[in-house]
Length: 515
Figure 1 (spheres, rainbow, N blue to C red):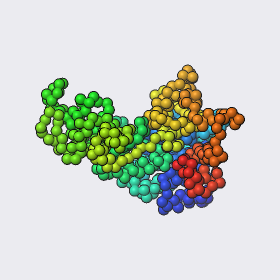
Figure 2: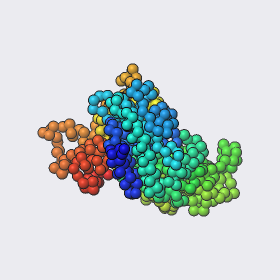
Figure 3: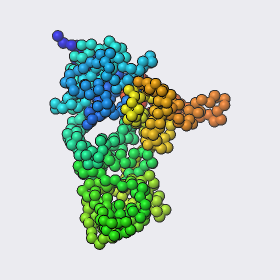
Figure 4: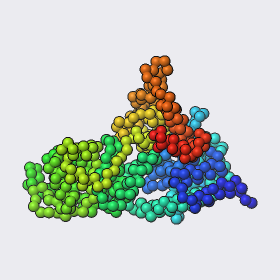
């Protein structure tokens, strides 16, 4: 006998297999179809990346959930799901902690999930990720939900695979595990950090990285302090043909002027006081790989001239030696200074600037990345949760709004440190160490923004009122932002709620600076 609701839910997914869709829209449509079959409070699609599960699409979870990285061995329920071939339901009295405790959107004060089930997704007989469903009702799921989830999971795997093929990601996915593992072992890192974000400026940056990574062009990475220039360099290297060798880095601002030349080019015994043996420099160590020169604008002018020679010819001489060494090194450089202005001021060589900026890459400041702030905050919350031995760590709605309203002069690094301090401050208010810790707006200790101060002022006391157009645009930003938050960044769903055409909403958001 035909299961009519199941068939009706699957038909749009079957149509999507042959359509070219953005990944986020494809995945959100998948979750919407599953919600039709198995109504619940929260649903998520997660991809397995080494020892972490990365959320690709969520519904009903806190806005920061997409930025979290769930380490499998720290979340026994997720580990248990990955070990099964079919759907698994966890009873309401299951003692295993739920990774979504405190993250499910709840208007009734209950933060802990009561009924959950999940199913692994397999592609080419290998585990690819998970579908998870959660409910605050302890009796929501039953055998029908399990059966339906297993059926949809097979179609979900086909949906994911179709999307990857259409986006030419299949080859990259096959090689990713090998290349990343080689990089991890060589660099001594457990897992390379990722660039997290779904904003238009972040996606544009990721597109430029993918474009230039496969070449040997020299890239000059610019941006304010704390925006993540080193992460961009790591991403460029990981996606390059040189990825099997380690990325070699040198912070040019962290060395005394007398040692910079030796660090770059090496030295021979007796070249200077303290040179008791020969030593290879970063260029020789990076031969065949990539050399990242951070804060390159801090190099002394005499060293700049020698660096230019190496970039032009590929030949270098160790300090104190007449012998030349040939090297094959790709250069990535970064600076928080405006090097063009430094050239005009005579503090940086023009010829070296032009040699370094073959492909300039600008990393946007955090204040221009919109709701990426919440995704990054979620990532830092998940990093701090096991350190503080907490079952759940979350942001209150007021805290989320405060993060979005702040200007972030210190960028991502400031956000990372702020989340760590706020978690400790929130914990200090709860000596009993709660199972789920909520960070309140006062824990963030952020200075009041100008817009927040203005909103608190009575109309008659405000020294200068905004014009009608400014007030309308401010209200539109708040309305659109709230709709996007309710729909986890899904623009189609937000447009439907606001009774706007999707394209019109996109144009309006771009005009208002929300995209």
